[in-house]
Length: 341
Image 1: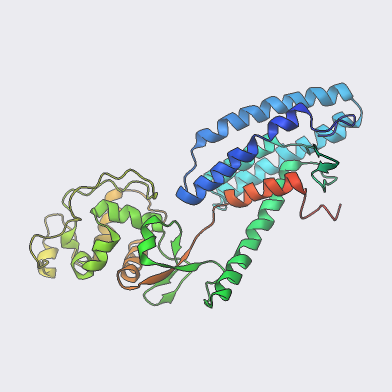
Image 2: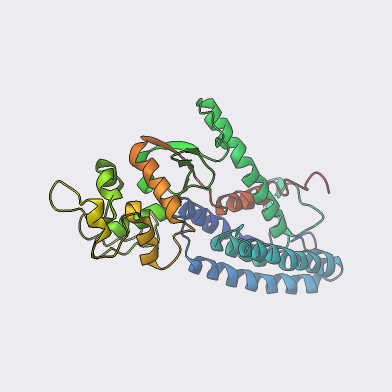
């Protein structure tokens, strides 16, 4: 925020702590799809303190510094960005971490900062709207829109032409256990609504299986009679989850599996017409495995038990565009409105 010609006020300098924090959360979201809520609390408290500091400086400066430079952008930041973040989280457009990140930015960056870098003052293109958190949001949206284009160019350059080339790429099955995203294949072809790979990990941990074991004996593990008597905790499906795995996935002793007739009278009461025990798994965890249905799980297991390479959607978390939007805003300003206003 510019006050009486000053550049890089104390509050603006302290706000730069958000850059390494958001870089770390973006990295964590890519690697684990999990960001602890506790990371946002210090930034929110810092933002509240800096907001009061800005208010005092603007009040002391008087004139437009109080009304136009402080009140208007702060009202836009808290009155527009906060409701947008909540609304998109409520309808499922954002994850919880994405919404919290935007809420923090609304408090931490309500006004446009200014930083001196030699003869240059950053951001290069401030706008008359003045609400910096709104600029970060619009930049993030533009980055998110550009990502499918980049993905399509990458696939086209590698000769991978497919209907899902805008949203995914092929990976070998060996990488699936350490990959986040969504399977874009079913036994009948490519699909936009395939199995969530976190749900796959939940299922495999619940059975005490590895994907390699499942691929070695798919006929065996299709039989619901091979479900473990005491399933393992499924965890939340994160790659880094601390899974306490017991046994060998309910594999039968000996070389042969039970017949369907035996499975129908299995002591667990699992019906023989439940291939892979998908329905039994979802019933046992008594919750949602990221919206997975028994049919979706079965289709995904069929694909992964046979295909050497599968198409997945990486599902780039929105925290990555938010971090990019923050850096672009600090250096350049508003990508969308900088040249229009």
